Image (cartoon, rainbow, N blue to C red; front, side, top):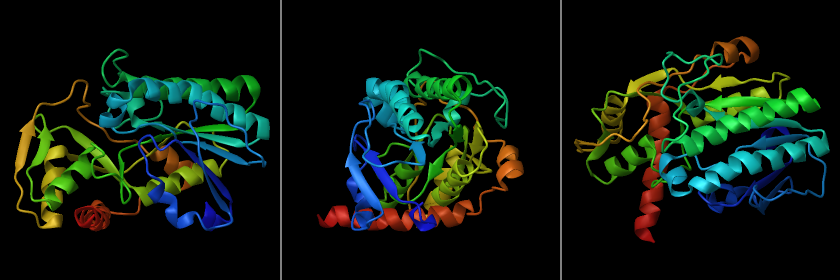
Length: 296
């Protein structure tokens, strides 16, 4: 957004993030960081034209560690972000997730699919928080006329993820770079479709700067099994690691791939970074991070 000439105020309580991710921006006059918990109301001293609500734990390891906070930021946090957008007459964008489709019975998943979600399972704190956020955003749009949009983000990866994030790609990369076995859940035949962060961000901005309300899938077509993803990481890093199979978590989806025809038709958007290129760039960043950690 800064590259497009749009000044940015960034709010984060750093529950699962780190200020180092924006340290390179803090000297800019068009960027301001405020440490703030979105479950508390937001008051800003300047007018804003866009409100992006991306606040949430996103990794299963994180939202299982912080279940109440995850539900609160999806409910109270979404309300406070919507109130802020309404006060300023701003366009609002909710970052939702492929998790609203649960363990899907339709494949690939179009935006018209309502999903197959366990409302009381261990993943429900994240799934239902996002589904509630979508409902509240839709209510503001329909009943109050708020200019609001919903983007459903599929498995995104890239630099600046935490090595201990808990999701598959950070875990595989950390283990491979340390020469450890790569832990694959279940038989490894469950699939995910991965999308490099640059492509995801471009899709989010394209939707925000359009007038489309969504929901709109933004994700990659590179569907692969978890075992194949682990083997690809081993090959790209040159590791000598083996695969170690562990128990599969409850309600872990069997398949996941977005139908992105809507994004293509409306925005002209499609992913541009191939999986091998994105994984190489991510591995190089992780290697530097782990090297810095060893030095420290």
